[in-house]
Amino acid sequence: MAGSCFTISTRTQTCAHRLPLSTASTHSSAWSISSCASGSARTPRRTRGPSPSSGSVPEFQYIAGRMTDLEPILALAGKLAAPYDLATMLVEVVDAATQVLGAERASVWLYEADSDELVLRVASDIAPVRMAAGAGIVGTCARTRKLINVPDCYADARFDPRVDRKSGYRTRCLLALPLIDHQEALVGVMQVLNKRHGVFDAADEALGGVLAAQCAVALQRTLMMQQVIEGEKLRREMETARVVQMSTLPAAMPQVPGYDLYGTFRPADLTGGDTFDLALTEQGLLIVLGDATGHGIGPALSVTQMHAMLRMALRLGADLELAYRSVNNQLAERLPADRFITAFIGLLDPATHRLRFHSGGQAPILCYRAKRASFEEHKPTTFPLAAMPLERLRPATTLELEPGDVLALISDGIYECADARGEDFGAERVRRLIAERHDGPMAELAAALLQAVQAFADGTPQADDMTLVLVKREPPGAQRVFRRSVQSLAQLVAFTAETVMDTKLRRTVDLVLEELFTNIVKYGRASDTLVSIDIRRLGRGVRVTITDPDAEYFDPQRAPQPDVGAPLERREPGGLGLHLVRELVDALEYRYAREERTGRITFSLGTRDAVH
Image (cartoon, rainbow, N blue to C red; front, side, top):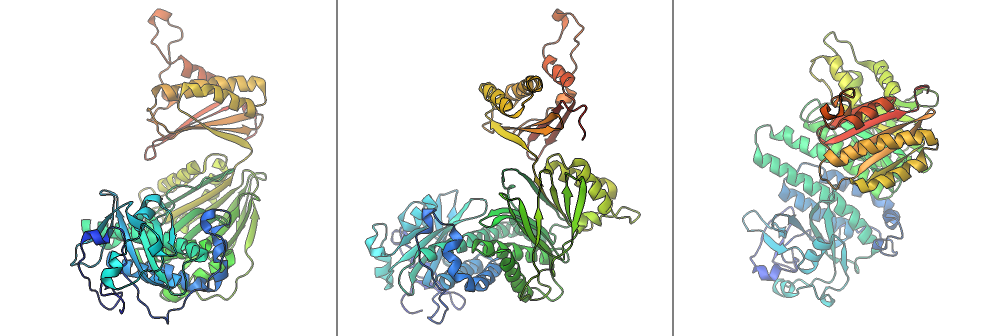
């Protein structure tokens, strides 16, 4: 550990010396959890080009020259997915930073939102070093959430050289990387010091950004694990694994114009072996359904590793085949011989509506064709992940999604859900429900499937995880959002004028929409959330859906009927507008999601003679 007596080594020994807090307020090279590997560590190859921060070139193009280093980087992703304690995870992170970026040292400052400070945890018996967010290079990186590349530290006014003078170590250049997790939460800042050959370049910035994103998720997951363990020792293993696994699932469905996307996971135990993903990448919309053998913490960690490796491979620019093969080969090395993951991994191009996928033992893959009102069923294309190392893959399957088509990925926990007599729910019931409800929102189709399975089981305990991924290409129509204000009524009328061509039908649509929208404004919560209105053609008529994302429960179908025959002076105020709505529409439906506080009103007009 030559060069600094103030450095905390990785792996072999831990030591620290106290410094006044003032000396650590703007610079952290002395108080570092460092990886001081010798020159024998392999330095990744570099590509040069304009800075990724310019936004002119996709991030992964800067790393294209390093594709030969993909599997070692994926190996790091696998290590970061392991359930380490915080101290060990910090060591793993700085090891990863120094190895991948070819640097001498690295440190990690964790962000504490309550105090708005960055904290460097040096050792268990030494008080953490604290720095105000916004102070120095590290603090500026945290405050702006932007990467900072300093090629000459002594030429930067934010750099404090006092730490170097005390330690005898000289900091030439540094790279400060914000650690932001997949839910946009600031976890901290990674500081990487002194590239072994030269200064950090554009390729280092791009690769460092990929590594920082992965490390942020790993550290956040570790902090969550630590909180659970400290809060409750009982059931600690299963509860922790549940937090880890659920943190890898999408926090919200991605918004893709022309598509309705929905995924859900219902584990049989506190943790399960199922997982799913829906995420926008440079290569397209990533669609994943995975099912690891077994239940409990082992399978949960297996699918967590798969998630981490797959996301990193795609961020590094790998195509579908390279990503699948690389992740498979890494998992084949890591998992026990009796463990594997059946997985659907696909990439959808929303512009061409073309889906390419590999299915490793995951079946059946259902595609409902709306135009023909029939199903296509596709078989697996290759072996499950981790079943064996793969040098090459068979060609991927390609699907062209037409308007109204639904891709349904459903885990075997639904197909094989049994009732008290031992009868399975089966594929036929799944197909029937999809055919009946394919023209509605995918969230409602998923809810209907799960409710049907629960009713079928009739109290029989859930024996396996249940996971659904539904991808629907929307039929022609239009959707727009409006401020929760009566002043939006003019914009609403303009919207229907663009969408509903039949003048007589449009007048009725306007009348019904105005009444329902006014009720939302008048009786709803004072909220800044936007109200969404979706208009779809249905035969010669239309189907209109109003979605209120911050609503109290109110079913217009159950509103009291006014006594229209009573004299005006005896009539109770209100209710006439909703009475008129019920009289005008062909059909009226109300759904309310209590957890999301979302109300959805759907009505149809001009469809009495339409073919459904």
